[in-house]
Amino acid sequence: MQLRPLGDRVVLKPVEREEKTKSGIVLPDTAKEKPQEGMVEAVGTGRILDNGTKIPMELSVGDKVLYAKYAGNEFKIDETEYLIISEKDVLAVVGSNGK
Image 1 (spheres, helix red, strand yellow):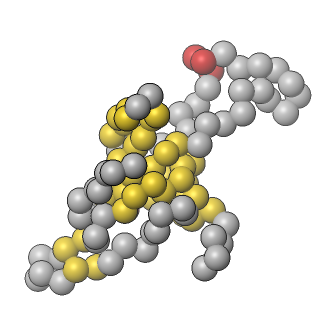
Image 2 (cartoon, helix red, strand yellow; image 1 turned 45 degrees about the vertical axis):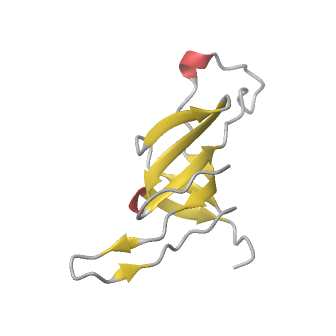
């Protein structure tokens, strides 16, 4: 993907949840919750403070993250859905990913 987010923004590919409950009930589209987990596809260069200091990003490509429920803007590229959010809307990194 040739997409470079600006500043402290992150491009995520949302991870879809299971379409069945643990007991085996298939959920219709209207009952599904918006995903809150995604894989980092691209990161910006970092946030710039009022005094001009740049704070580097804590996230890197390949991180699996949890993000705020209604954060960001959704878009499609080649039938694949992505989400651009600010780094402050990322709540946690799932797993260690070698760090």
